[in-house]
Image (tube, rainbow, N blue to C red; front, top):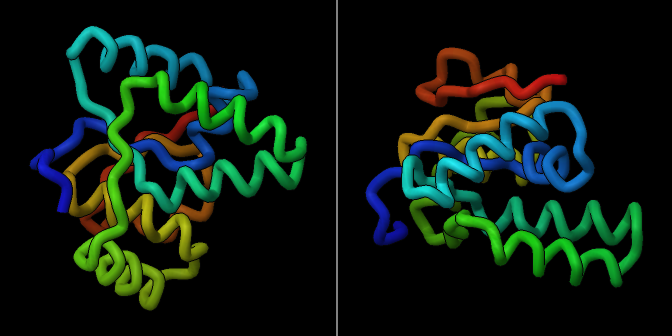
Length: 140
């Protein structure tokens, strides 16, 4: 696991894309990013979900946009959490027991293992209600 013991918030791909595209929940993400920049909270994101942002961006806008998006994300006060064995096995367990994408299982696993509030507006996470994962639902 990462050297950090916990995060206040975990971002999933939905939240990052909402921020980048000024979509529903973007204002809340900006608030959290500002707080993190001021050392008032900590933010984490699974590297698997970074890959999810990259493939969605490339599919929708092309490879050139991916480079811009990655540069933008690297400048944010977000710690990228690697997919080590504990994360992979936790994500596998979540995926085995819930109907959600494998990438989303990594966001959930990261939130569970690092005890962070998962910031998302993705309805796939509704299946995790009562599963030791706290979700803050982003909306317009």
